[in-house]
Length: 179
Image 1 (cartoon, rainbow, N blue to C red):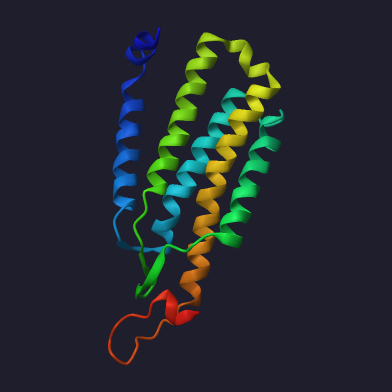
Image 2: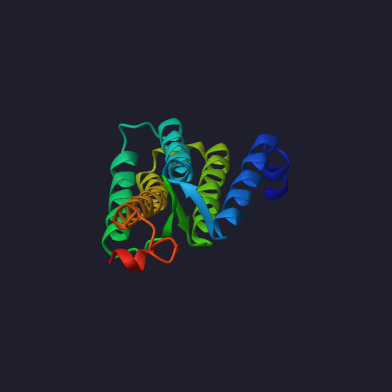
């Protein structure tokens, strides 16, 4: 059965997976980027999750409260206790970000949840009406989205606290200089 699921998976799904892996590997390296580029992955993951919820369960079911709860919990956790990935201001509107494997892990988690969800609902369509299943899937998507959104907010807040003027030695200020 697993072999049939993999064979019948549309090619575009594997292309999406390749793009996510590529973006995740890039995020593992230290890099300079704009605030807007920093928001791309969290926004794409948000759209993917909400699209899955809307198309599979509808926005009026227990799905949205479960997603909102998961998203709120991790957004607040990242804001309150998360570590910023911002290392320094790299120029006007640009920041230097620390590399992390977490984005790759979370992107693959969202992809896997959506993939398994689609496969389960093809094989067992009645699962879409099971509150425990719906709550679990949507809560997990919410947790992933909450992490992305909270980390984005934490990074933006950290970038705004860093002084934008260069230090006297010509080295860009770091997050430690802003604290």
